[in-house]
Image (cartoon, rainbow over the protein chains, first blue to last red):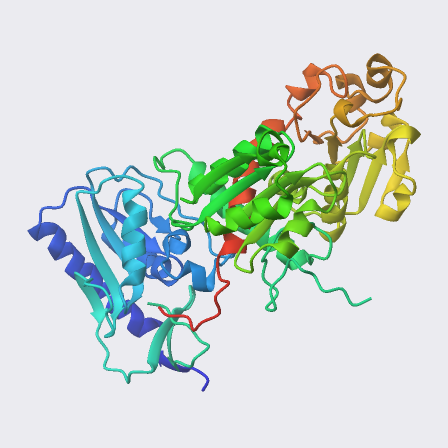
Length: 180
Length: 327
């Protein structure tokens, strides 16, 4: 079945505004000093772009391509088109806000955290995701969530972008992957 | 002619990397794109230059012929992918005790290796090994006789792309010992597959193969004429160890006619890049002022060698299992 539109840009931007507010209160409560933000390619970077502007962080946005850290490499190989990681700041002893579009199994986040630690030792990692799906395979949870939709087991959501952002709903088949 | 490329899986993915021959442009571009991603690992600000892609895999360097640089870059590439590396210098090892090549292979297979990186003085050796080893093993050709040195060609393509962007408008001159050069053969195939405007070879008649035009090149015997208006000059090493007969009057004479000097370089385009696969013979095929000069990208080639070998290793060893993708 072809994917259908689930949510359009204005609604998605509302979710991102809500995420920015949640992040601000976390930064206040936990007294996080000088946090940096890292988006996960590709959808996470689009979400992080908006969040980064709303929070007005001092450092440029960092990006992660977790292909080199995936646990399913021996099955699916590499995608040569994804841009390389770019962390234009020192993360040693600083709080990192990690952003992704969809959290499902938790495997992407595990890979991302492994890669982050190859750049240094952050003082804390705060996870912000636009969509929090069920289907966790690892003990990973988000600190900040845009939405938690109720979906059928074979449904999956994915983000199209960057301009305009659009969330689509598809049905998983044996041959298709998904973005968690 | 229907040609089944034994380097590829049924899905068209790399299984072995033996030769540029038969590989499509898209696949070469995939290799370059993947390698470009790996070059980012060496950027400063990234204290750990390793990634865990090939953790648990064993890569064996099977070198039947000596080479420091190529073996070192293959070894570093495998280690930066977190593979375990075994270096076997066969010329000083089992074969001198009378063990056959196939027996050596069977022993390595019994040690559960995943990849053989093969360098051999005979053309076709890597393909022979690929055809005779167990199915789960990938073979990379690190140079076989005068036949092919495809990873060298790909690192050269990456270096060219980093400087020139698009391949299509480029004129590239390859200068020197084309006859004995597996590097030149692989470069010519790669350049033509990537669609450059013109590949020229510049060499004395004694250092050209019987029918050089069949390689898809224009032939020049005069260096200045040949490098006029080119974008890229690739100097080849004069391979003294491969010269059984008298191909040249003297090294001095060769330098006078074919050695690249700053004065001769003025005939090429202003933004020409000068490449050399190394090791360089200063004062034989290239003047020090050029090798160390502003047009030289020789050391960048060495760095790119690691990234390209990482890319090809991970493409050969990843994504081979076609079970359903999980997220």
